Length: 133
Image 1 (cartoon, rainbow, N blue to C red):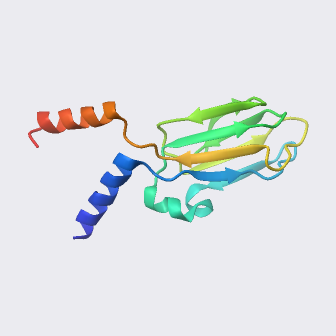
Image 2: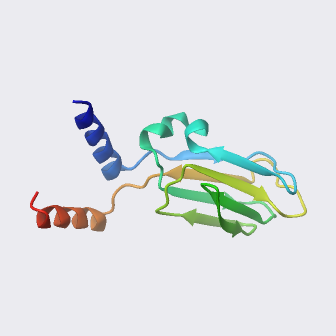
């Protein structure tokens, strides 16, 4: 019974995606960083873990470095929106390696799992047919 409920939840998340979990970063002084652990910062996200998409909006005048799950991912220039798709997002770290401070509210993050696209659903259906299910 429990396995069936888990399978139904997994299918619902796969088909519908997850809610968007939004975070506004506080002030980050030069050389400092802010760490986000998805399960702690967004307790409701535990039911959708791992989330698969991260969008960082850098409206500051500073360059920041992004690490996802402990691995360096990208340098995000000032005024840029960067998307990290199709990656299990458990945690991320934003580091201000610029010489000036980032003001509170200038950088935001949106973490989610997008719904299954039509092409992905068609591939899954074909795979099930080929496997005889």
